[in-house]
Image (cartoon, rainbow over all chains, first blue to last red; front, side):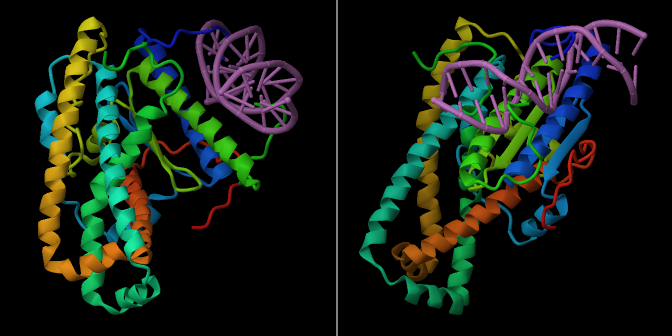
Length: 182
Length: 182
DNA sequence: GCCTATTAATAATC
DNA sequence: GATTATTAATAGGC
């Protein structure tokens, strides 16, 4: 979209690169803003310039998010953290990074499906919700339990869910074509 | 940039909104990818659709960028955070594919184990709430409540991680009057 | 999803 | 930073 078409490859000239970064960053944030407004979506972007300078755009405001944040506690689980640490080979490459995320997601998805199925079964067993709902509201112990439950679910539910579509929704050509496991 | 010019205001028609979200999300991710490639920048985008579905794009990964942004405030309970850190290499080849396959398998297996183990531990911990837990699991209503709670936290968690210390690059003019509840 | 008229982003330039 | 020739994204329609 300029005087000339350019290849999507690293810009060599440092000056040009910086200019490009600035312009496109602005454009990206603008797009993000439009998306959030048009669709009422919550969007957060953080990035580091070639010179490692941090930039970000977010909607809604940080304050709102921080407020929400104050209600929750520290996360606790460590699902598969070490696993990958060991697999962190030397010169894997960008693509591999994404692929790893994909695998994580896939495996996690499997797990979640199983869990969901399990829950669904139990779901059918009882249908005394209204009663339980009242119980929850009147029981501090239960409330605490729910809170703990939520805390435990945070990472696996949140980050993995996020990472999920992270890889799936990658834009046009994945930079380089690659095949999944042979 | 379409058959017609549109106002940057919330799209009323739900169908249109969803279509718009999909298209623009794709476009945004594409732009983000181009930016990261062109400038070698690290970019992470997290968003929630109007229906609160999470999506994300990141290079090298959400975790890496978010971690960086948070200056290591988070602990390693994030899946595969450190792994991708140093992978700045850009060479992709047969070797990478092979390595990838290997890692995929390894990761997949071990991740499942880790996940299972994690679940087991969690269950034990929760045994003290066995009674309440049982109640929760047997009640669709409670489950839904928990899920809603988790969903709500998903947003705050990720938005916070990504936007907390974000301050710098807010886009230029909001394009068009936009109104959002504060 | 694919198509294409149209608008919007932006590369080169100043 | 501002301008503008071009390309790229996309709104509306299948």
